[in-house]
Length: 165
Picture 1 (cartoon, one colour):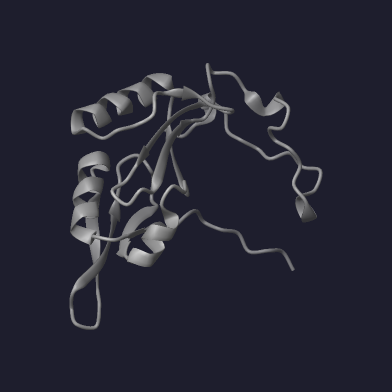
Picture 2: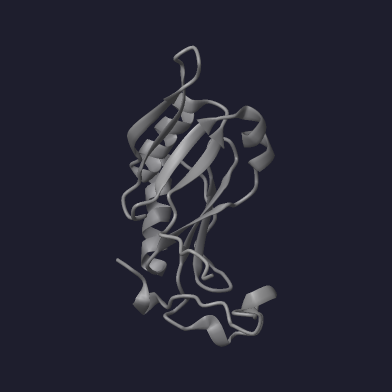
């Protein structure tokens, strides 16, 4: 029997310690537009979900969970895509205007990278598809075959020219 196919990513849930603080931050930084609220048994809002322009149909949810937020500090579970180095630099300027510390725009292994932290220390990455418009799939260590049923097939990565706008 063939394996059923996925239809995309439905949502990404980010644990936070202080929902109002984090919601304000994600609204300022990413223009998050809340479309849903999640209430606990007492009716207190403990989570929200919404849309961030430019990431497609996937929702971003913030859920109050101090233990999980503490455990994720310094980890980078999300890599938001930007088109090119100029976009990464524009984001650095945006973060500067908001007074949010960030890395310089870094030439990383497969593209340009900008790193910064949300209020709980979650490391967020803005990553381009490729550096200098070069296809890095031929680079040593990139696109290595994976184990299991996909063994022998290279890991595909879109080129900057193929990125969805």
